[in-house]
Length: 146
Length: 146
DNA sequence: GTGCAACCTCAAGGTAACTTGAGATCAAGC
DNA sequence: GCTTGATCTCAAGTTACCTTGAGGTTGCAC
Image (tube, rainbow over all chains, first blue to last red; front, top):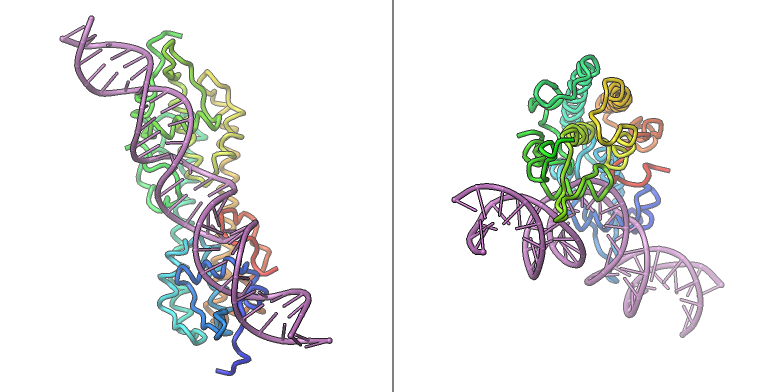
């Protein structure tokens, strides 16, 4: 580990487009780790650029930081993830996307039925039924019609 | 308007599955309006059940309360929305779903390419490119690689 | 006419994902 | 060796979407 390979936080920020404050926040959350200089400044590995990039991608896929941390914990800290590492995580993320798409497609179908009938009726409207609630996530309402 | 048609907040809560506190919150945000009794208690119209139900559906589609308010403001307050009212909004929501699905499908395709190459490289990986950033929304990072 | 559930307001708390600010220290060029 | 920009910590603020709690009032049934 050449000393020149260690990046200060500002450098990492510039390379990833992530704010310095956000990187510190991620470290706090355990998503990334840093060495410290004698003067207590953070020093990161080059491979952390990819680690952070992974966080960006995963966020776009709708994962929360906690979920991302779970995925990341399967990656080795301190070395660039191997092809196998990365593929494993990617496939898992693909599954998440598939689920999201399926849910949206279902909702769209039900909405179409609703446009047809124009009911907006609690009794009949498919949109109110519970079978597509899973994966709702978010901070939305706790339940949709008991 | 028969007095018996006016619902107290608890009744509305029971009928929609939305917490009393949330209904008050929505009123505060202007998503719903209420009459008041002489004793200052809220009284809602029957049609507000549907109005609230609409909020639930729209939230599931990923709209924020502000956006929902925008849609709702095209509905008449105080009467059950007509078939035409409802269809107009439904179609608009359908458009939103379509967009989301398209975005996810694109992301999935890129992820597939990435699984293939295993690169996770800032320079080459399609996932980092900007052309699918629109609709990101959320509280995520402010930008993904300048 | 009284008891008690349901209602009221207003302030503060909770989570996610960060940012901002204050006040202090570090590192590196000249 | 000094200045200046980068970094540090820690606390508090931000937005969205609500919930919880305190302290007080209303309305309906008996």
